[in-house]
Image (cartoon, rainbow over all chains, first blue to last red):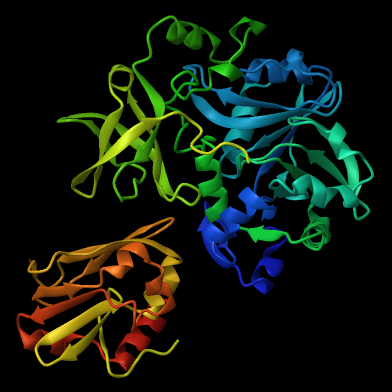
Length: 357
Length: 128
């Protein structure tokens, strides 16, 4: 298995390790629910160094990214980053990404760990205008500091005024003498920061952040329960190469008018018709935990399937995202989920399940 | 990890306390450690009957679902209801307060097929 630069530190902290798509990473330290609560109430720190960093470089880099992704770079001011996606010609997801224009000729794409190689190959195949592509993932580490106290925790460590760094903005600064890219982004539904630094400085960055306050080390288990409560998509669950942005509830990242891009023609056709199915939130009304793959029923008819499910630590009940037939979702508020042979009642709820503290 | 000597064990990581032809069943310290925090438990009803290897119930952690298999043919006498509200008791005290099921053994000879503490410990070492 691959290891991040923080592997030794995770061992010292007594982390419970797991194989996450070929990466040996902590699933938890003190416990998933304690870590989850820390991020909702105070502040937690995640090692997300397994994420991928791809750099596009050259005079035509911006045009290339405009062609490869469905969101519109022209909407960004200097210092803004953007949630976007690489789509197939059918308008389905290759990966969801964050785009960081670092300069006129340099763009950083943060891609999912499990999709780094796939995204690299995809971009190479469709690269235009002499643009160069570099997979820098091994050179970077990434930490996420997340929670209502994230800003107060980080402020003493940086020279910039964090009040001036708004959500989905980034800047270059330093932490403990280490040059970093600091991004006000996150995957938890809380305020927070993602810190991109040189891989070799990962231990320094981690220790500095951990010592900056009562910061809870958090693993992949809490990362998943937090993002699911916030209804943030996970590749392989809410989005994959059979799903288009409209059914996933991500129409807001698709800018059809921006000019030619991969998947545009297919998306125009999809948008012109009614959606056959869409992503909904389900909240269990009986004590049971829905899981990926469990079927969703409207009385005797199967109308969908669960994409992600867990016991929500904040709500203390089962929650799930599911793709359900649009007509059934419009006509009905209560469904059942087949949980190992027994149908349990679930109510349709608006997403996200939990709003920011 | 030490396993109580007075109990018998299965390869599916259940323990069995034998009391004449009545048995108490739970999951081992190894099992609860592998699962992590247990957040949900599904137990059978009193009077239900099971064959050896049948699924008696379910234990769930945040991330996974684990079946509990019946170590022997039996009929349920009692279940540990407080576990429904406090499933984490299984993590805290798997052999004591974390007991899950009390049952009447259908065939006491099936108990001979179960593992001793030493055999179970050896089995775990092979598995990991």
